[in-house]
Length: 219
Length: 246
Ligand SMILES: Nc1ncnc2c1ncn2[C@@H]1O[C@H](COP(=O)(O)OP(=O)(O)OP(=O)(O)O)[C@@H](O)[C@H]1O
Ligand SMILES: [Mg+2]
Image 1 (tube, each protein chain N blue to C red):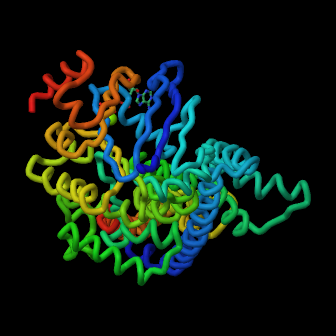
Image 2: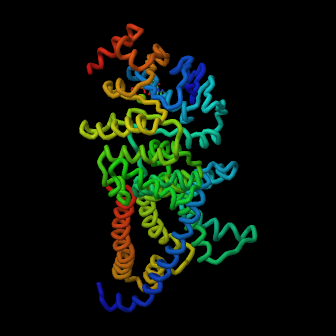
């Protein structure tokens, strides 16, 4: 392993790092928005749309991101929808992540005890009031662990962006290896780069899970 | 003249194919306390839950304050402000302080002015000797304290009828008294109309104006309180009282 080779490659890795970070960030925020909307539609049983949402969730969860990206990048232009690789990557991540986030939120809402709901009903609350004051505040707290797991999962999934040549971390490493063959060095940097993102983030999320849980339920 | 607050006629309730309440009919006078007694599984909780719409029933009529209840979700939601219910497991909302728990119904459901309700809530808390816990979270309270708050939460809506389903059953013995005293006070001082399911026979004997004795979903006896405990009409009720050993 040569330190010089690593050093030379760093500027490119820094760029790749930035791409991975910003795309993950935007994709995850988008996925949470989509997931929350979907789970609200399911919670309130909005007619017809809730069936569409269920179908979407099943489809997105049961197809690999790789295939979703191929579709967006290679198949959509055939029907006249040509998008940049970056756009395809973000849409793909939000499409996949939205379904996972929907499941996470729904799991939280479903996890609220029947007794809590009934004691809300017993003071005359409407379905909407129950949702706003009882189900959602507690449901969010219950869904935090699943959301945290999804965040980590989605960041790792961004490595698949390399197949449509988005210059994120994995793509950067694969390109460098293709050009200069120093696979030990480049893979080493790649691992370190992901660890720099994921390890502090997962510690932060674990801390947050505990905070939210204690703040809401007191244990 | 005594005024009837609640009349139930021929109420039938099924869970699937299994009938759990058979032709339940009784009435309750304003200001009186009705105690529902009966062995486990006799349908006491189910009956209470039918009376505030938490369970649907197959047939029968409920007349509350002179008006026949049309059992739609919206009507029950309105009626629950008049018919309060407290459960065995108290179920305060863990994400809110004691005061927020109490204010939720009056302020959000009944849209009463917050300042006014808050004053009233504090007075109620004082009455149950828990005023110092207004800004605490339920987790900081003992079971007995939580149950008293749950009762206050229901009272804050100004109900005309209160339903209590074994509200002391999950409390440590030393906590039971405070809760029972509060219920006794509500009857003696506020003349609150109440239906109480309890296994505390001494308490039932003290407080009951009327006793319904249920078995297998049927009313076996509907007797004035004093009489029920001294001379039950049926053999079955007599056996039940003996088995309770109080
Ligand atoms: N959700 C339910 N689904 C099906 N059967 C039920 C349900 N809830 C209660 N039952 C049945 O209905 C009958 C009456 O139950 P209920 O809980 O009203 O009795 P109870 O008198 O309150 O008993 P306990 O003293 O044990 O609380 C029982 O046979 C019970 O098994
Ligand atoms: Mg019961």
